[in-house]
Length: 110
Image (cartoon, rainbow, N blue to C red; front, side, top):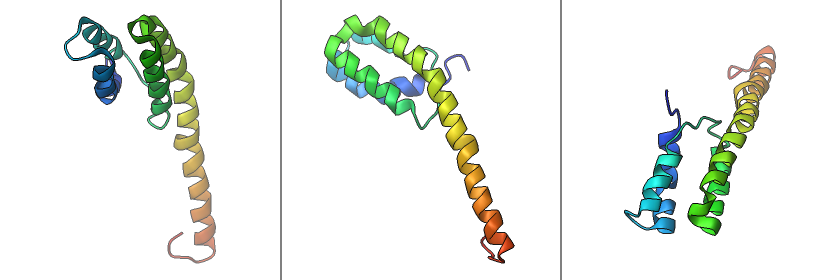
């Protein structure tokens, strides 16, 4: 649990990092270490953070290292809260209410 989703985050963006920094460059190795650090957010919103990250790295390259860390740390908490609220509570509640209404009407799928 030390890195949570950090290795998955790195695995997802690694092809793009190789295009930006080239294979086996010192910058690539350092950015791989940076992206393998702790990361934990909603699985439904992590792509937004990845998109911002890649856009910054394509524009500023290695100079964006500290900014990328800040974006990841700053956004993973709020996106986790929103994602958990929507997909962990709101969606099941809505579908549960629909199923209960269908069951009251005698529908076998309810």
